[in-house]
Image 1 (cartoon, each protein chain N blue to C red):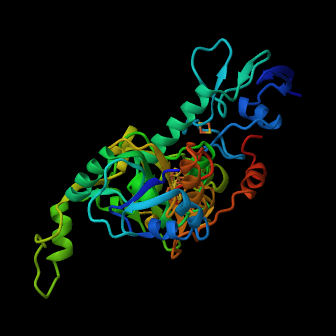
Image 2: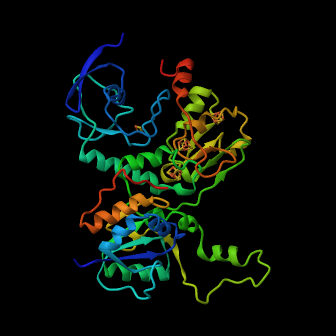
Image 3: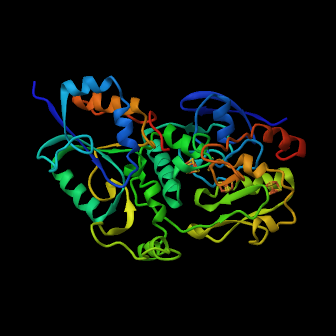
Length: 176
Length: 236
Ligand code: SF4
Ligand code: SF4
Ligand code: SF4
Ligand code: FES
């Protein structure tokens, strides 16, 4: 049987959702039999492959770079899963949203900074006006809230998806 | 003696007495209707709209917590349409202000969060509002975080009806509505507040909490409110 291609993507999140993926422990062996991890922080690949079966996205869409990445990933993914509260609700990354980006950066990098005050521009992506949930930018096929989602929920989701079933998560998962 | 009447709830014949609400009768017959602003012991306010039900012959949905039951009424508490409505109401409650459960004092003790889960709301389909809202830390013992307030008015009612202090009021309209203490003073300046903490205990969310607590540390208890309200003769 041909193995499924699974990718993960790390946008504006704390990496906790990726930690929770690793926490599925022995279930990962079952996943490994049915799927190859083809992209994401857990593997070395530099370019997002074509025709990926399942991509798990951690994090809100917060910068121009996040925006371009998620667009490209959507085009090359059959089933896109918003994994965790940052991807699903925008969560903590959105705490900056009530403030203007310029004022925010000045407050952090200029005001009261003694050594080399100045807003960094080299090698960092431009922030969007707001950090938003993934589904405000592209279509999402499955939502798995939680901060992070419990490993058991991730194991269940991957197991079901790799069996070709859409998992029914209603009332099994929660925000926070 | 209130007059006995008979009604149908989800097709089942039920006995009720005049003066009861649809919610009273439904609960007495073990039917689940989701509620948030309702709290046993306080006068129902009908403000959250989560408890909407279908009544035969009525062209619109009615809030179960404020609608008096009537002889011969046939009520439906559960349908696909009701679930969709309740989920949408929940989504609007979540998107109006800023809810970040993972860093909230009430995480895992919150009625709003638990109700979202119970109703199967896994995401909010509409854009979030992200308003800029203050946190009032002027009170010596408690805080009011407007980011988490759903304007259910439980605090307003418990303070007026049970404590008798009348500290809280809702000011403004629609999206600009805000909970205010005594004509919009910092809560800490309130002379009427007895610091009893009842408002904190009945608040279904992390909007009212004890000071100095961390994430997930604010568990609440409102079981005694019904008893206290009976003592004071609210809803005699
Ligand atoms: S008040 Fe409830 S729903 Fe809102 S952030 Fe806190 S735990 Fe979540
Ligand atoms: S602490 Fe008691 S008196 Fe003060 S506002 Fe809350 S309910 Fe009213
Ligand atoms: S502070 Fe709490 S109890 Fe008062 S209106 Fe807001 S959510 Fe309801
Ligand atoms: S519980 Fe009936 S409107 Fe809120």
